Image 1 (cartoon, rainbow, N blue to C red):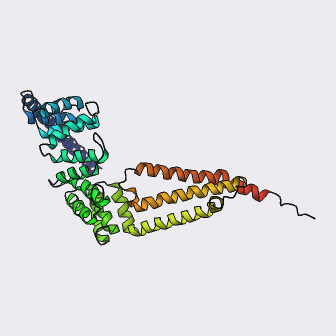
Image 2 (cartoon, rainbow, N blue to C red; image 1 turned 30 degrees about the vertical axis):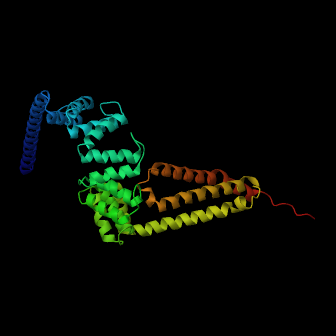
Image 3 (tube, rainbow, N blue to C red; image 1 turned 90 degrees about the vertical axis):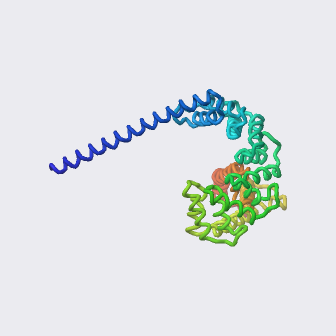
Length: 351
């Protein structure tokens, strides 16, 4: 029993010592940060552009000081007005996101362009993004491609991933899977999770490269290790039954659903037969719903399961609505009408 109490007491003392050391360390770090902020503030108040930028970043991140986007934007502006490219880009991003200032795409473009004029890779990537999405400028894939390329050639991985996507989908350039793979690989090797997931998908499906399950798993694992949800799901699928087999199964399912829908509604669509009763009407409408659902599935299959489509959210909403409509039709119209038909007495035969 004494040994038990000695062990317990030792654990308590050690825990208290570790906690005390941790508390002392945190206080020392806080004092150091406070001292660093005071030093930066002194330099910034004397017009040092780099200090103004660093102070703005600290205020935006909330490190050593309470997070304050308004103060951060004010310090970014001071540095940006002195021509500090990083501050110009960050101020543009704050206008783009509406952080510390009113959201203003035109003003965002103004500051991002100033940073672009100095060759800032992040600003070039941001300008490409604005042209791609038509935010602050007219949508122009060729211009988006141009600015993504400038940033990508400076080694900026986000731009490399964006340029690869444009080659993969033929946006602003001729579709070129090999070139897409080249740029995805450059970004993936720098640790970009989106590029790693995309490269895994390309190797799994054999777009631009020979299908290579082992290589696909390598890249999916890298992306999944960074928390990429799509990579995690794809990795599970690939390790169990294979991504290609899954896609083929989805296509076969869509074909079956379309055939069933066509069978339900072909008499009423092509022959223009009159709908007799609620049961026939419900079956005809259900057939149209099933064919619409299959049509969405075909579209998704042809566009890589909507992985990067700007209509991805609308697509999933439409499919959810069609699923709900099919279920409601079956529950509220088809089954009740069928039961009523089964219960109806047989027609009397003429004598």
